[in-house]
Length: 266
Image 1 (cartoon, rainbow, N blue to C red):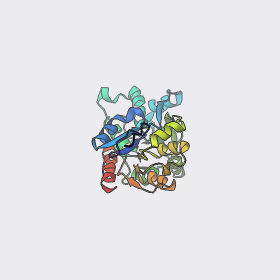
Image 2 (image 1 turned 90 degrees about the horizontal axis):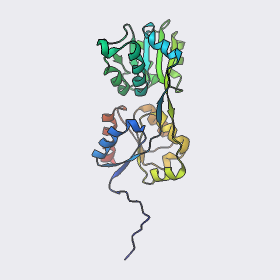
Image 3 (image 1 turned 45 degrees about the vertical axis):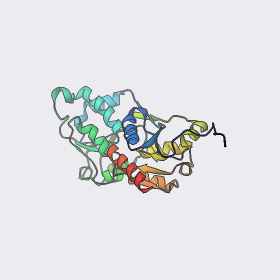
Image 4 (image 1 turned 90 degrees about the vertical axis):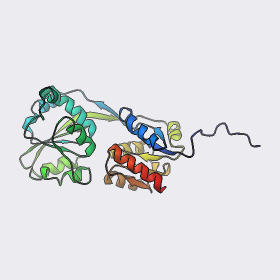
């Protein structure tokens, strides 16, 4: 009789391993839901969100936010932190008002929009894809010559939106409200995380790029990717990922539906 291999991994081979890289503070709910689908969740946070201290420039932007014609919110993190700043100078809950008047509020995706709408703000989102390119075809961002536009975002990121709006004649400013910190995992930690060749779930291109910075050949070490948008799916494809399931959005319900489709088709 063969002796058992005491060094063999103890994971359950019948469960689909799903690698979740969301920040720890944002992962609990979807991890529980993935487990409810009968999957094994592997938690490996790739981004830590750190709110930045308020600078005089940011304070001025929020105190005088009614001087802006359009406010564009890039992410749910930007929405949450931005709203906390806004509440200091335009206390939405205290006065039960919908915030400063005369502003077109634009969120890049539905997750971000939901954060804003929870505070009573009338927010528009792109009709189809949830990225800068889709935002640029929205009616609210067409005739912007001479208008002031404020973008809430993290430090760094794509310049496509701001540069295109400036070409249309808008005056564009940034409120950089947080920074993304990438944990530095060693090769042993990565080997343990990837030993089951998991299905990778990513919520943004930044998360996938953070992985690639430490695991350039990630495509060879996963069975596929759940992507929240066409842009992220195209990024995954450019990295050599062969099997990609694109969710309708980054909303939990849509990401979970994509995992379920994967279970049924693979």
